[in-house]
Image: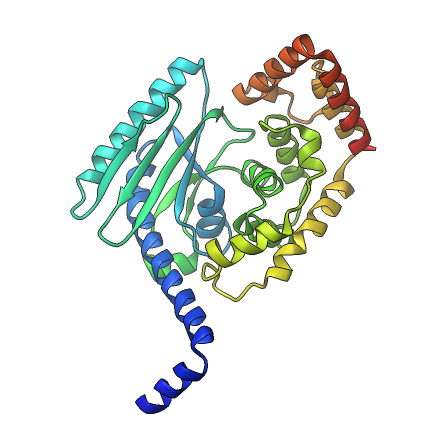
Length: 328
């Protein structure tokens, strides 16, 4: 048998290298998930945070369709920026100290930038990051304490964590898919379209995160999909992450399915709300959750719109007109 193995490797080296490479990647991802699961109880002790992003989706909401290797956190409440950032810093310090008390784990806070809120966690064979957004503080809907899904419990053990609502979770994920166009985000959106589907609640969450996104609303709603880049990232940063083989073609279908699904949900009220927001005179009565007007990210976006209107009126008018066309 060993002789046959050598012959096959000589005849089909590229194929085997790709297969071995995918297995190596999956082993690497699995080690990261193991570390992530070891870190989560230390994070969960800080009640000011709720889990969001790919780990919340794939380890808690869905039944572990793909590996996820980062802990993305939302700061649940908000006051003024200085108070919030001080509280976030204190919580991250406690998490770092708690993790460093575990044998074989090293946790280091990254503070290269004033608003960087990140912990890098290492073992001898794995590395993950824990990250908090300093801008998007507060949530649309209350989070809930959730256990990991059954498959994760069977493979990696049991833990619970405060997880953001589906509206916050998938509202943010849809914006991430439109913005980053990463295969991981496309995969998560593809699964969402299957279960639970693009519900009105999730669509409301999307509108909230769309309004507060750093990029212009029209750019996200009319994304220019870079399929070549998606294909490259698929090979380099996605292959080996899923429980079942997921083709590039199925992920690229999201570039059609997602815009269609979003368009089917838009009402006249939604269009009026987004347009009034872009005009920097938001009609909050047009949106189901008018209290989002107090969210720091929403207020920050409004300040930026006011600055653009003041400093470059022509560019501002062009941006409003572009959104009108996109929303038609």
